[in-house]
Image (cartoon, rainbow, N blue to C red; front, side, top):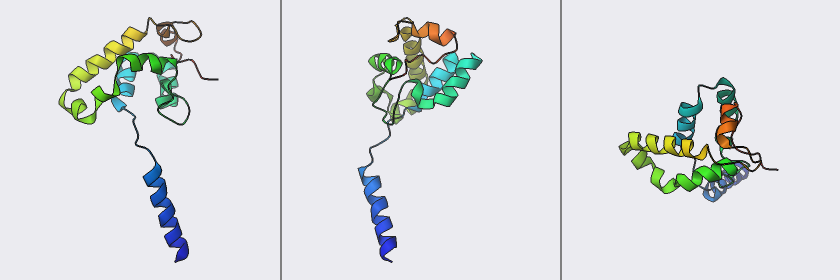
Length: 127
């Protein structure tokens, strides 16, 4: 009985201490809709999932591509209620931001758009 109580207490503490998830599925969906026709990029993005823009274990850790997009796509504007109420506007904003950052350069000096056209993930991996 003591083990069961200890296990339940441990589960409760883990849930209480874990932070909320901030993944915003429309960003990944928008990326796939804009760039999904490139088979190599689609495969890489499906494997990378959130790490197209992020790295590490925290969603706060963004690669250079994720940081460029974060300048244009403010998380507060993409809350669930707005996504449901204005799906077309949300989709358009995401697509515009994706296209706009194509001209920006990654940390290695290559444009994000050139990397995408070559079928590579746009962000520069963190070392």
